[in-house]
Image (cartoon, rainbow, N blue to C red; front, side):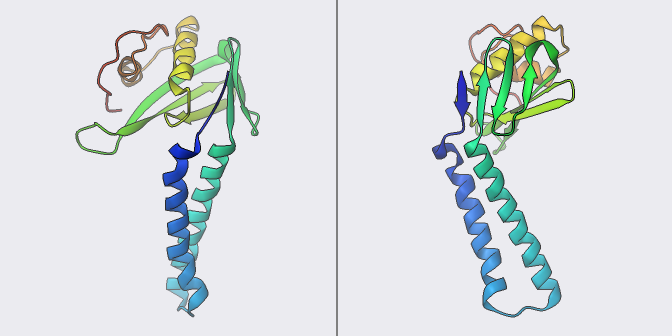
Amino acid sequence: MTYSYPLNRLAGDYVRAGAGLLLTAMPLLLSPLPPLPFTILLLLTALFVGYGVHTAFCHRRRINVNEDQIFTQPDGVCLNWRDLREVKLEYYSTRKESTAGWMQMTLRGGNKRLRIDSRLDGFQDIVRYAATSAHANDLFLSQTTAANLAALGIDVDGTTKAPTEHSDG
């Protein structure tokens, strides 16, 4: 199965990158500045360019998953499920009440690391594959990861159960 980051879930990142670029690059282009403000604005401009490039990379990225492996295009990261050595699932809250936020999963195997977030279409499917592989490989899952799996309705063996509240992690 192939998964990707849809435009509607990345639109806010594109807007933030564009607005930041506009607000930092315009003063550089329109008026002469003393060295310190120029340097600060130049660094901020580079930061927003980097953020925009990262967002475009996510938008272009395709994540392919099957029973044996997970691999990405165009960057070519390939991780065999049997080589999986770490699964980390973290929840990042955007509000104190923990009602809004996103999850990020980090997979490690061999000398490879793959990080995906919950904006990806099919994120829950990939988390289920990872939980099943972690169970099959007899991996230790942190309390935070186990709680976040439960929040998605996934047992530590990759089976589905009733979802619970997101856990802070």
